[in-house]
Length: 255
Length: 67
Image (cartoon, rainbow over all chains, first blue to last red; front, side, top):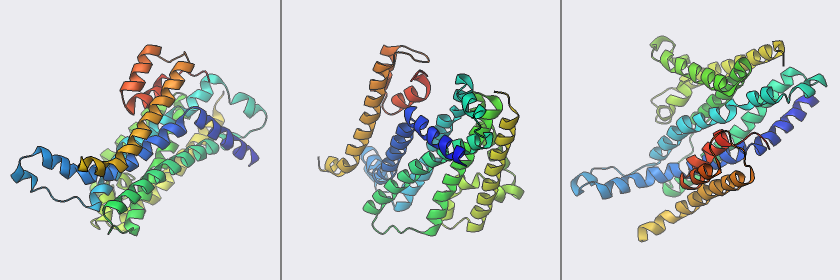
């Protein structure tokens, strides 16, 4: 266990030195500010461009627009950035041979995998909830009648959990292919397959992509919470499976 | 003008974030002469003139490995 904490600490330092904290933190902060801003002023901007009769037909923006922007940005650009940033974390260790001295001194390989995942997950959690907090405060400022519902909370947690899933996949890919392109390819490939599977109605409810595609539906009550929880359970199981796969592969590898 | 004032509480933090990214990247470009591709002038231009995306691109893809 002490190996896990030592390596976790080393990972945090390495994330800071490779500017992951800076990029992730600032970009998600920027998203957090831009979401409510875009929602609030888009009707104004459109109104100033379009001729009068059309402009008056544009409805006033509501808090829901802000959440729409939030889920759009964090599930598209946000998750893409996350995958790109953390796809290289194993390949650096392989090319620079930095793991060898640690492993020969008794650091277990399971600790390496879990510490890497935990450190990446911690950064993602902080950045994502920072973005959510900023969006929430600005939304509250613009639309004071905004209420924090547990549907919103569930919806936000869904994207967060999907982010963890992506991190586990990137780690598995990085170990399986030993380079960052392989990690990205595996992550992207699995996500694409999941989105294709979403076309099959029978297993639709169990698909992890529900977590990043039905967010607005959940807030508007058009999607049942049970669906979300089921997809969440499956995603958690898949994340664990990916991590275990990564451990098994890594244990068999020669460095 | 009145509308601009309404935007200010948002524009100020956005501008600060954009410049924080650009300046951190610029300092890194100048102090570390090794890049995965491109040269110093190329990266200075990218980092300063492509807002947000430029510095991210540099930190993710352009930054050399030597620390």
